[in-house]
Amino acid sequence: MVRALLFGWARANHPSHLHYAWDLECAPSLDFAILETTRQAVALLDLGGIERPHLFEPGCGIGGGVTQVAAMLPAATVTGLSLVERQLEIGRAMANRRKLQNIDLVHGNYLSTPFPDAHFDGIFAIECLVYAPIAEKVALCRELFRILRPGRTFVSFEPSRLRDPRDETERKLIQNVLDGWTMPLPPTAVEFQSAACEAGFELTRCEDATTHVHESARRIAAIARRVLAPLAGIARVPLVGNVVVPLGFQSLRHAQRFLQACLSQVGVFEAGLGAYYVHVFRKPAS
Image 1: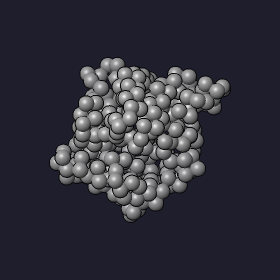
Image 2: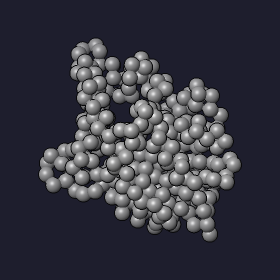
Image 3: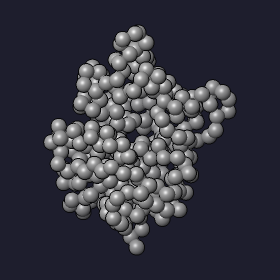
Image 4: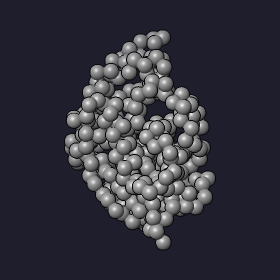
């Protein structure tokens, strides 16, 4: 956190900006557990027999996931796509600092990518497709289906909606997460499966993996209370509002919304409003 405040997340060499951590309660460290989520996703791509696989992450952000996978699989080429050019610049700088030559970061929209048909050996999406509205899910899955090679796998680790809120307290929990993490209401697992299958994919695995990330959700809330909340308080003082900028926040209001999301997301899981799902889809071989 100190390095992030001094240099920003992109230069902090810390994976906390990536995604939920996997089985944190039995991991040797938070860093290890965060990267274990990535390792779990890569393992499900089932790349055995492919010497130099070409992998794709839609909505790669600043390239945290892409750089981690590229480091794990030096024989692979890992392509990431983002609509925000500034994110790609940060990702390229991160890859250069780590001396990773097997990364390609591309500017574009994942509803209409610049890639040819059957271009990738695997697609992984870890908490990135959740930012696409439900109405766009079929079109998104069709594009992923188009660019994936026949017989290959698309793996998704994403939050899912379980039920509608029953009262104002539950409604506020959900809204805090949506506002703070700037995301639309996620689909249910069934809605996401329907979109992928309508696009042509075959569902080969569906798992409610909430228990694997629950301790991580609790840790996020704890860090928010102990670190982000005090920083947000300090940022209210005149002339020191920029203390939150290295952490990626554009303003104090942005930091406050993010703080509320971090505090509320564990409540969404524990109230049974949402879950964390692993989906594995296959593009038919013919």
